[in-house]
Length: 226
View 1 (cartoon, helix red, strand yellow):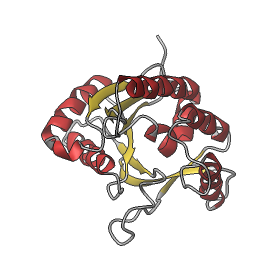
View 2 (cartoon, helix red, strand yellow; view 1 turned 180 degrees about the vertical axis):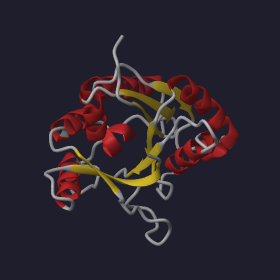
View 3 (cartoon, one colour; view 1 turned 90 degrees about the horizontal axis):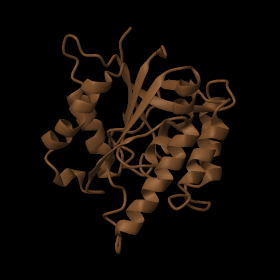
View 4 (tube, one colour; view 1 turned 90 degrees about the vertical axis):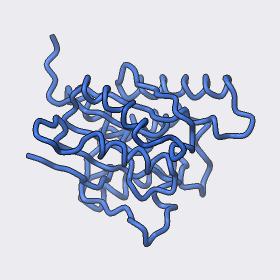
């Protein structure tokens, strides 16, 4: 039986948020022998005009390719309504998430920043914190919020801004992150959009250079129990 160092769970609102927010960190966890799991809450496309089964299949195929690049075997797709998670009672989102957390028993969770413009991101953050209340015996010892371009930086700047307090060196995994993002080519945009591949690479280098490494991903530490 394989022995893992840590069990890690990424709770993302949509397929592509994992690569945008912490793709390099995921690749590093996998390379270091950690067991990494992913939950996608919403389907990612049903809010779009003229969306249908073909769009869902394309998004699912892109997710499969990205997870393969990152070294993850599969993800949990809950299929909740895209950009309408605020229309679902929060308790229902939590009840879908809690059994997965109980089964996986993660020590580390990565999820969205609570101040993001995208409502699904905000619901994901709230659902994680509620499902992972620090009761005695809780398995989750670390929770980190990541930034997702075209949501985190577009939010109202005076309302809960993203303030990094934790960095992961992804100098050796930036190429993997970019390759995973290329799997979501339909979600990427051309410059000067902040969700362009060139900007995302520049952001990783900027985050890294601010802490003295070649590339990094930045997070807000929500819980860090040692």
